[in-house]
Image 1 (tube, rainbow, N blue to C red):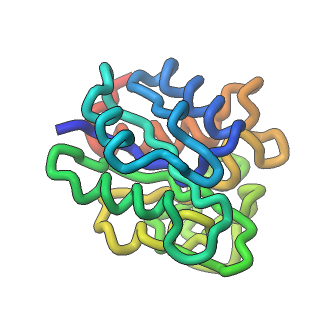
Image 2: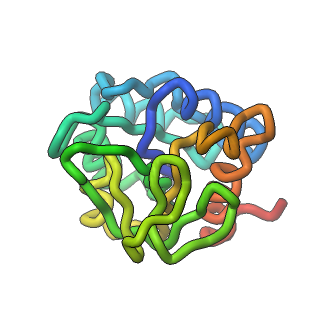
Image 3: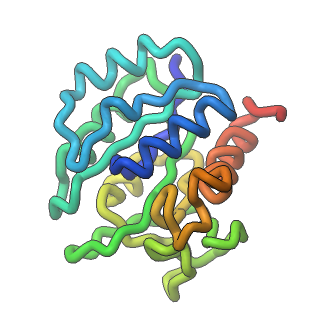
Length: 187
């Protein structure tokens, strides 16, 4: 059973950051399949997951601002329904969405790397919402019964506080927490 971490972002910053962190933490980044919005088919994505050389497999999904259930969320549903895939957690990335899609989250990591019971916005600043985040590709996360959903601001950005040049510390902390809670990371 392939262990997967879902990431609800697919822009160039997210791709570079996840590639960088997959090399640092171990695993396989499927960033080359990400798009904003997603265009890859569920079959191609699942074949790539099953064929990944190392775990966890980092899967980036993005609806590109499409309201309602977009292709990123359809992919998310298909991945979660595959009995040979074990989704060990998700990074729910905040967005300035017009349609205000939201999801419950286990907790957030703000732009300073602190754990928060509140949601965060795109810049990683805490919001007044306890335990939920507004985002683009997050609507279906609630329905999937995932073991851990961590909310963070925009991957690789957050006013430079998650820049790859300084090691993307916010995204790294979130990924490490998923791996530690799952019990597969000892470094």
